[in-house]
Image (cartoon, rainbow, N blue to C red; front, top):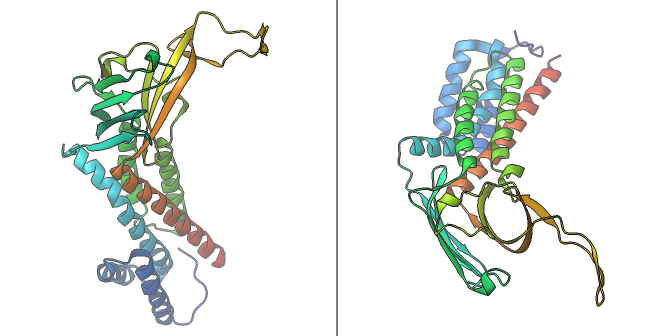
Length: 306
């Protein structure tokens, strides 16, 4: 049983907290208010004052979290139903002569695209043109992982709906926060997705990329990051040497890329915002803030009731 502060009249307690609940719910949700209050009233009638605190402190924030996560759930539903039409993103720099092109993100892959890049230290400064093959799309593993994580979030959110005690409410909120953190971490680039550890996916480009050119894509929050690099390979690690004109010359920095020592001669980085990911990222951030507030409120209520 959830401990309650002494009160000679449960009806007065119910009326007071119901009034506060209505004001808080309007602020949190700003929509579907009448239906939510009716649902809460049914909860009060069913469980009475013994569960009034768990219902009062759980439901508004839970509904607010679910409403915001609906954006994520809708994204997964459309993808499962094969309704993903894809999002075409422009790839441009301030000077269109440096890089221009586009990519189409559909589900967990780039299904098509075209890039023209010009770098002074690659191909004698001539433009390099390539397309993403429709037969061999460029994989985006972060999207695949995001989809799986959101499906788990849907299940975890259900455990928040009707906690039997404040302890269960706190644990459900902690579990949801952990999964929200994991989901948000997926949309941050990991080391294995960044140069020089990123997979090359040569088969995704037509014509095939020369080995001195690296093109890679990854996600960072709600952005698609495209990186193009001109490379120079070394048979052995460069060493410091002495020049008659310049004195001691430090060796260039090299990376192990595809099993070879590579020096980056030139690079271009382009950032494009993905509309669907922008909505999902905002939804995850808002849900995280609401879940944190919900858990803190439950902790405060439990401490006050001791």
